[in-house]
Image (cartoon, rainbow, N blue to C red; front, side, top):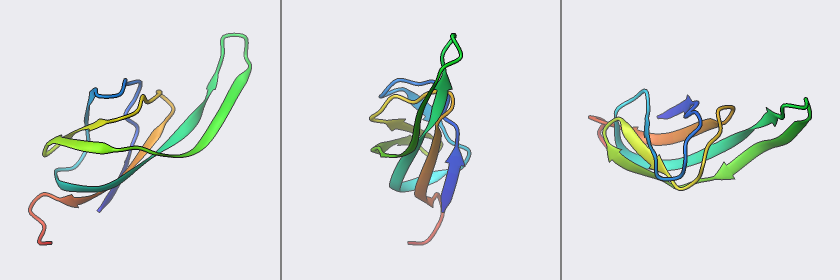
Length: 84
């Protein structure tokens, strides 16, 4: 199963609640968004970044990278209760 979520502004190692129950994480990719500075200049770093996601419990993970408010996380996982 794949879920796309916006983890918000977090630091590496912070706990992130995901909108599905997880049995096992298969992979994670972080798509960096773009940020606009106070002076109106934009920084474009859009693109996939490989990250390592670690399961804390059924609905919480940790990433090994910082995330920004404009980033999207694509999490590929085995749902809790699924037969593998």
